Image (cartoon, rainbow, N blue to C red; front, side, top):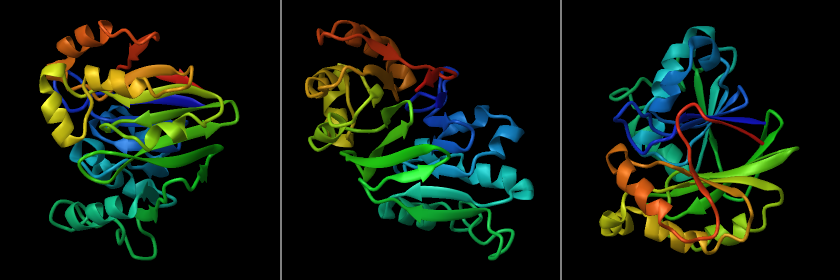
Length: 254
């Protein structure tokens, strides 16, 4: 399984793009501005989008994916999200004010988009992968994703704060190769992190103390304005494992 980082940052700026990850050719995890890195032919192959939550840095280009592929789409883009996420997308995005409702375009019988409700802990099988939502703590209902293939698996948690229920689930995963976890701000912004449901390096250190896996830990979702300080503070952590910052264009083989 090939896992490609299209957007690794927590917002735009400095040439960086927000959260989007391509799994194989058919599956997208989140649809932030990183999705704009793909050429038309690759956009048209995406049939499934797994959305962690409805914040704009994770869904900004979802309507544009529908618009860009409407003419040549043989089947609808299936958006997988929790009931809360799909309700937010329906109410606030695909409402004809922000975006056309592609669930009825070009017609009700042949829509460009359809919704599929995710239940945390219930696996979804797509294109040889098994994807399972894991609840995490954030400002709104949010999930991480466990992506498993025949050769290994990874977990991607692009937005999360202190999440007690997350670690027992992760620690039970067999053949976990990578854990992608957010660090949004520097330590000076720890109160902002607590209020908004994010991690800074000191909170990351607390969280990783609960990781009982030998998986490689990869950092994502850093705000570009915080990157310099975050890298210094992460380098100073004493946690007994190396940490890797992912950048746009990185590819993980699982």
